[in-house]
Length: 210
Image (cartoon, rainbow, N blue to C red; front, side, top):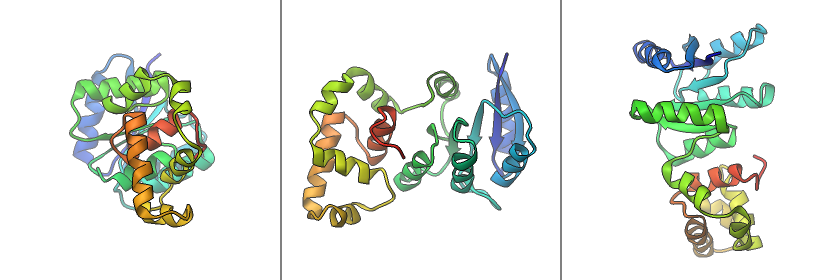
């Protein structure tokens, strides 16, 4: 049986091209194309069979990606969603992951890597960048946790919210310089290079319930 994929994107030409690409992949077929999150939500509310995977754009009229993710998190928390967008800022990525997005892709992705991402989300539940995947694969989970201090874990929890690093410093009653030290320490210990990497690591190992 083929894996069904819903495409939520307001750019008609791109969505149609994406449909053709997905349908060309073995074991995949497009479930439907929706111009915004509201159209997808209406489909879900109609009690129709749910797609195996939703490909979700970020910037859309009426109901955008984050709004759609928030609704899915509340009403269909097990639905697998993969963001596919041109938005590459760290705050948007972190926010979408916090809402339950299983992966985050940019629209200029290579078709072969795109197919790999679909397979990973279907089989493993998440898709990570190479850097994050290698960090998770190459280090033992328990050994990594042993090297994390209580304050580093506390900082990791705050890093998985929408707070700025300055706000995290205020929350932990620490100086911004000390917070920078925690961040760089975790980057090194977990072999990640961004705040997004920290969030993905925390979700992968179920350290935090976002």
